[in-house]
Image (tube, rainbow, N blue to C red; front, side):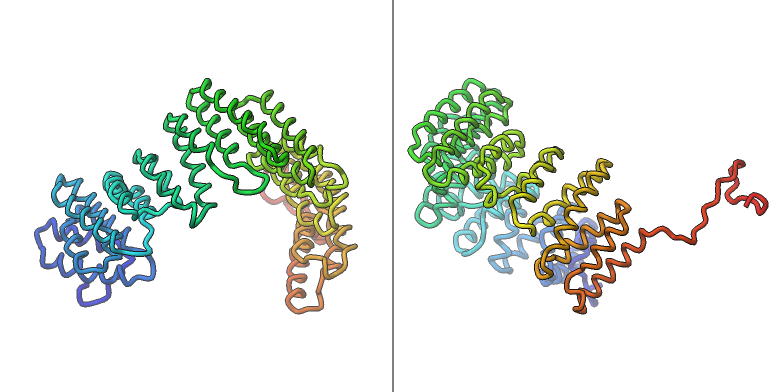
Length: 476
């Protein structure tokens, strides 16, 4: 093995090295580790972490890895020193653990363009939580922790929320939108850790992200639901009252409308349906009072409910949109949510509105979802009605607007329902059939449909009453 090729993706080598160590054969272990580590590093895939995991699980020696890393790149030291420190901890080697952590800190300070938060999260996922926490505590005051994805999650786990807020606030100048997202996460994290006062204080100061949307209101509403879920209903009601008071004072009516929409979503989440309906009606009232594009504001409120799969209030709000605005209103999302929660009645009504108000090309794009839902419930007749309508639209479309994908979907669905003649008629209108690539697709579709045609030469014999597999010649 030492003279030949070693596969860096085969972690049995890691276990073999550990076995030689335990058999007190350090010379072979040294040679085998050196050659295998080089192969692991040169692999096309990231095999270093799983290799070390297999090695340590088999009882491998952290000293060997630590000494090897001394001669390796700072990038590799950054990646693996905390793992080595964690293995020292498992072996009660506290001084060696401290040394490995100190070296990691020195490397992290000098290295550039490496995501420390991701590394600490990865280290935590691999079971080295104490080492990741110590490293984060040390790196925060050194300004070597970036404000980004998973920062708040780690800080919550390590009880370091107070320490990371300055990191987030510094994003004001460089990335204000990311700062808003992280402040929302931070506020809700404080609520989850039973610190509602701090949560509210942060949420109230979150600035606007979009002209007609208030992240502060949305965050306060979610803080209230978090407190309610944590068994703090009185605090939750207090935050809801504060949120509604702030919403009422917003001057821009479109923003006030979406603010009440956010409150209604939160109230529905904790089962306060009456309060949620009152908030929804306020959202509708202020949306209709908005001086500019009130129907667009209503559509925004609808989407707030859809984002949380709250179909009934979304549908009720959608019906407030004037018919003159439906041509410009997104109805597809309403269909998708209705199907996701299993309400085929609303899905059908929304599809009918698409057919009535949107361009013909829109209908074949969305309707197959509803057809499949009907077929899944055995409602074949409803499926056929939609298939016939879709086929009619496709055939009437100019060829350049007729999508081969849409035609193929409807033909296949027709085949499932046994409507072979209708499917064949649609194949006969396959677009661009004179072009080679589309001609091949058309032929493949034809072959698929032909599989559903009954075989006129097939003779079906009755089952023998004696349960013989085949009837006798006389019985035939």
